Image (tube, rainbow, N blue to C red):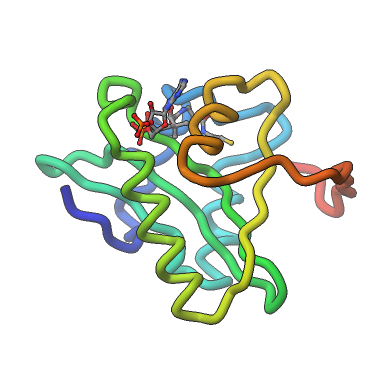
Amino acid sequence: MLIRPYQENDETAVIALWEKSGLTRPWNDPQKDIVRKLKVQADWFVVAEQDQQIVASVMAGYDGHRGWINYLAVDPLLQGQGVGRRIMHYVEQQLLEFGCPKINLQIRKSNEEAISFYRKIGYSEDEVLSFGKRLIPD
Ligand SMILES: CC(C)(COP(=O)(O)OP(=O)(O)OC[C@H]1O[C@@H](n2cnc3c(N)ncnc32)[C@H](O)[C@@H]1OP(=O)(O)O)[C@@H](O)C(=O)NCCC(=O)NCCS
């Protein structure tokens, strides 16, 4: 399995991966999210490729204080085989090399599978409320 930065011709496969992994939501436009990410730390949007197929993705970023993780997805056919752990390790190393001291991420409360996964790979719940304010309606 090859973990590498996203390339522009990966768009269709990546959006299909997000759809089959249950990550897309009506209020998030995946194409716009990709275009925005390609303008900011584009190399930290990474995919895993196996047999020329995109099988996993994750978007990482560092704002100078915290690292952030979004759009982690593993192809449902390959879940439970260590792919999520490997692609997370890859971006964690990228963030660490940049001096990032802590990673934050948000999980929908209903996503018990992801909560279990993140606990297994060393993440724990912070005693915070997560607030957001949308600036651009998609
Ligand atoms: C969450 C997700 C990325 C995990 O990827 P994965 O490749 O299946 O996970 P891994 O095989 O690397 O698992 C790593 C560890 O987490 C555990 N784990 C993974 N999924 C789990 C689940 N549903 N329930 C309990 N534990 C789980 C594994 O057992 C493994 O632990 P171990 O090393 O002790 O055996 C994947 O299930 C996914 O894409 N889900 C849909 C999209 C999503 O919810 N993304 C996260 C948004 S916040």
